[in-house]
Length: 337
Ligand SMILES: NC(=O)c1ccc[n+]([C@@H]2O[C@H](COP(=O)([O-])OP(=O)(O)OC[C@H]3O[C@@H](n4cnc5c(N)ncnc54)[C@H](OP(=O)(O)O)[C@@H]3O)[C@@H](O)[C@H]2O)c1
Image 1 (cartoon, rainbow, N blue to C red):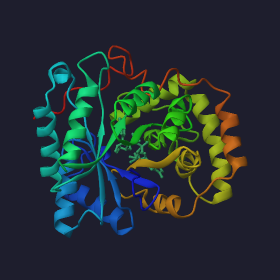
Image 2: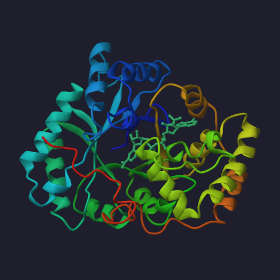
Image 3: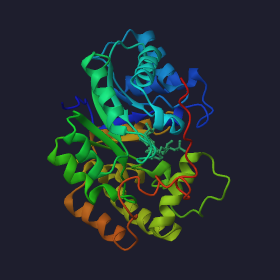
Image 4: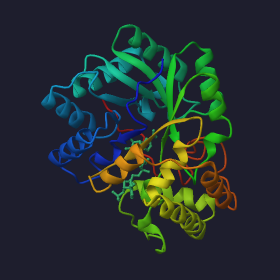
C-alpha cells in the first residue's frame, strides 16, 4: 500500500500547464530534465493540467524510463457537468487517456477529486477506479481534497486508499483538525500542496506590498485569498519575519523553511512543490537533502501563526462553495474526453 518515495519532495506539474505558464513544451521538458538529473523521481500532474501528462510522457519516452525509474502521480478529475451521469466507461476512457498520454501501461497513482459531494455518487466512481486497479490499469488509488469524514467513509467502502493530497502550510492548517488523525489511523500517506502558498511564503514577498490585481497567475489569486482568511497581508509579513530568522540559522531561504515546517509534521509524508522553471532547483535540492527543523523552531512558527485566524472549516471546505470567492476562481470543466 505504501508509496515508494525516493525523497520527500514531489515536483508539481500544474505550474507547467498551458494557461498557467507560457513555457513551451521544450522548456517544460528542460525543467523535468533538470529536476530528474538532480535526483527528483516523483512528479505530480493531472488529467486537467493541460499538456502536462503529454510532456511527462514525452520525457519518459525520450529517456526510455521504466516504472522503477520515475513515479508519476496523476489525478482523475471528472468534470462538474458529468458528475450526475458518470459511468464506468467514462472513467475508464479518462484513465486510458492518461495511460496513453504518459505512455504507461499502468498508472502508478491516480488521485481522485470530486467537485461537488451532493452531485452524483463519488463512491461509485471510486468503485470504478478499484475495478480498473484490479484490471491492472493503475497501481494505487489516491484522493485529493476530501474531508476527514469522507475519507473514513471511502475506506469503510473497501476502497484501498494509498494517499491524499491537500493544501497544507503554515497558513493553511485545516488538515490538522481531523484529517491527520484519519490518515494516520488508516495508513494513508498525506501529501501537501501549497506549502509555499504559490510563492507567497518566500523571501520575494518579505517587506513588499501586497500584489495588486490582475495577478500574474491563478495560483497567486488562490493563495492570496487564504492570506485574507488568515488576517491579511500584515499577518503574512509577521510570519515571514519569523521564517526569515529561522532561515538565517540554516543559511537557507524562507520558502524552504515553510516547506520544512510541513515536512516536520509527523503525519506528513511529502510536499509537492511547483516548478515552472529551474530557478528554485538548488533550494529544492538543499531542502530535500539537508534541511530539518528542530522542535523549538516548529514551536516558534506555531507561536506566530497562532496569533492569527485559523482557516475556517475542513480541508477544501471553503473551495467547495462554488458561489463563494474561493470556489468562483476554479475551472470546473477541463476534462472533455
Ligand atoms: N490537488 C489539488 O487540488 C492541487 C492544487 C494545487 C496544486 N496541486 C499540486 O501541487 C503542485 C504545487 O502547486 P502549489 O499550488 O502547491 O504551488 P506552490 O508549490 O505553493 O507554489 C509554486 C510556486 O512557488 C514559488 N516557489 C517554489 N519554490 C520556491 C522557493 N524555494 N523559493 C521561492 N519561491 C518558490 C514559485 O513561484 P515563481 O515561479 O513565481 O518563483 C513556484 O512556481 C502543483 O504543481 C500540483 O501538482 C494540487
